[in-house]
Length: 137
Image (tube, one colour):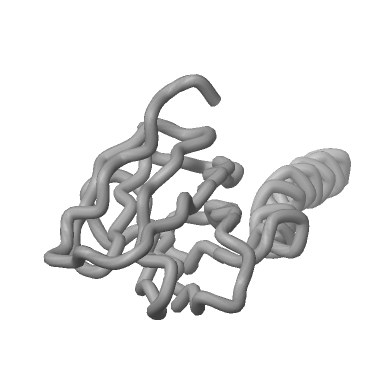
């Protein structure tokens, strides 16, 4: 990542560290994400971003899709935790996203989406079979 980290917006003069945040789209996704750090909001594209955060106290991190309350996921990052997080958008926009240590987050709603996408063609096929059977009598 070649860009400088986004400065911390809160009133804080202590030691800082860099939060590396990787946001990953779900099956259905808005154009970008809104990252909230201790109440300050930053509109970002999908991918990697770096933020300055206090090094000696917990920081509240919230990620949502677009500018609204879609796919919201939140966590509190303590000074003892590594300063890297991953956000994964859900498979359906009415579900919450997930946020956590890189490599540990899973996409919510994959089975629901699979059921929706698989069930509709199966129902259409069953309807066609029923119609063919009725017309062949």
